[in-house]
Image (cartoon, rainbow over all chains, first blue to last red; front, side, top):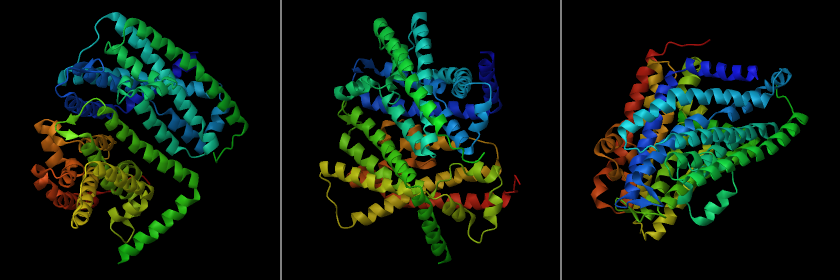
Length: 263
Length: 261
């Protein structure tokens, strides 16, 4: 266990070394949120609310979604792909840890860094510029914290899956790009899930994506009742268990047919 | 002439490389399509809840999006320089470029081509024709000519902004993430600028003129007469910004001292 915690720490410190990237990161996210703020203002027009969300709730939803993304988002799919392509993964296999577990911990280190140095200050800046409404009460915050942790787990699991496919596809840059776009749309980052037409909502109900962004953002904006929140978090838990299965299967298959390209 | 011949030789070489990894090429084109579809789905879902966006209808917004895809496809096929600083300045690759007998920027363009992005032109045209058909837009004989001029203008606006940003790399070699930010800001130009406040509108028109890639030129085909002056400015703004960026680039090259090995 200690070695995994060490992994989180090391990655955290590595991120600290490239701090300038995160100042500009805060700016990028603020600008992005700003663009959506104006867009939603225009979309709402005279309307008081759309699908039960007021304009202030909607702006908060957008801000929280993007700030939460800083925590759960990571590049470990790209890193795994890179290490496989360069043949470095062969060395990783003889080291005394579980490769996928170690990657997850590195992702967590990155996420914690971004949460502390990026999401929190970013959120303060954004809330000074745009009218936001925070779900008051420690219970909301507590549920949000649990839910965002599951967001990280599920998103990371999907990243691991995408990364492992490099063993079979050799070059999967396109797939990684496609996955990113799909997650942005179907996780509810760009649009709350209940804005979609019913048939699309039904389809998405069978997919793990809404557990990534929609659930924590709805909890934070008080768009969910308490019992809805509990159900959603339960679903997140179920998904994070289900996703372990394909990871395990693909990983065993990958190890069997591994070809080291150089290294 | 020499430049044209070089260009086609690089294109031929590029095709050979890409066609060697066909599966990869297909996935890349599909992921581009997916990306374009996501933006379209966003527009469609939003208009499931509202009729007008500051007086613009759903089909008009879709039309603007379709138009935007075309200059953007040209830009991303030939001006793939978002990692210029990392790739050429920090690693010292630019030394190699300077030994070549053609203009340094042209050499980089040749090396970094991504011709599969040109598929965006087809997507863009289909989206435009779909929306245009629903809006009953009729084409006059001269409009295709204007269309081409506007598309080139829009692509040059994008190219100008990104070349100017890449040139900053000659002055400061610190790693920055301005480029991804610009891609985000570029998306602002896809929506009618009258939804933004005055400051953003001014920035999008005169400082980072992304509005000339989407909404202004499209306004002409949508017969929004109040925007006509801006529509006709498109090619001039494009050429202006492009020339400005080339001058900046040339100045930057003079300052380049070489790094890495």
